[in-house]
Amino acid sequence: QVQLVESGGGLVQAGASLRLSCIISGLTFSGRASGWFRQAPGKEREFVATINWNGATTRYADSVKGRFTISRDIAKNAQFLQMDSLKAEDTATYYCAADREGGGAGSPAAQRYDYWGRGIQVTVSS
Image: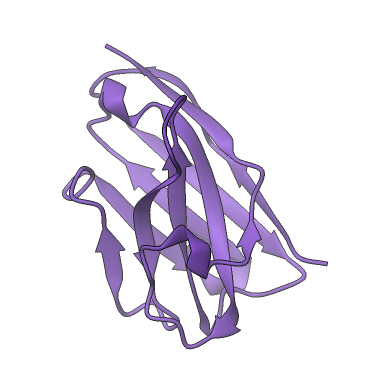
């Protein structure tokens, strides 16, 4: 049984920082692509950041480039999203995702990922 659990969200003011964590169980992040996606009210789920199977390559949505950083600590079964200079438009439910298959390049397509966390709310007040 694979589970991903996000934490670290909350309500902050614009310009603040948050660090999201995702702990995986029943599977390891090692050897597979994973990432973060988000969904705002009335919007479709969108790509935020991904990391490839060996952690060597990251990919970011244009809207978060230079502000967000994805990383993983394989030994701790953890994936992180450091979010700096938060904006009101970053407000969304953030989801941690992992690919069932190994060797992924870090696709920005949500449909590529098989395992999902329940999501965690990030609200940025302007």
